[in-house]
Image 1: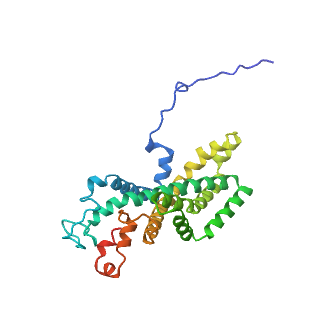
Image 2 (image 1 turned 45 degrees about the horizontal axis):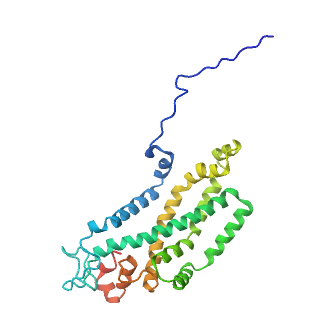
Image 3 (image 1 turned 90 degrees about the horizontal axis):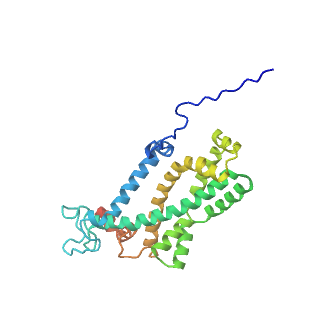
Length: 274
């Protein structure tokens, strides 16, 4: 009996290292770009952020500058969006107000998305008792009137921007949690996840490398909606006098100052832009 020696063949490019792909060629961007709503929401949010950052450069006036000769003036060449009851330029206050309103929305969304994503990944991936208790806790939180709880907590700890951001974020994670859980339940049965588990890859690596990148787009969509909801919540708190205090320019305070029936009927430039 003779033994046949196996021959090892090495291809010419076997020792080369694959060139790292750029961001726009990455799997994340390819998945994300397929979700048109996520792309549209991100573009609009980025545009608002740029306006807020560049507010001192693009705003025609200071937000608190008063022109006694132009009180409640309609839009004109001097004031593109008109002036309010104190003679302040609406466009300038709208641009500067984006800073605080977007800060509240983005920070609150970051807190809510962080909590919701973490709980959703745990619930969807591990299942069983972990999923049961996380979902029951989520159901309990969802049954609580969120706005009433936020008003109560903010009134107790004091009306400040920081408190408003934290409270809105802490009580707003339930929607994100359910979205992430649903996506994770679907993904954990996919072949690539099962193959990774068979290869003995650690659970945290599977979640971070295979599960999380596939739920980023739904998270961003949920986040853009949450930013809008957080801004409206801040407006409601400002309307009740327990949010960002007047005369600080925020979209909520601008709506508060334009709440009279006369303004609603005859001066739409005071409430339509914010």
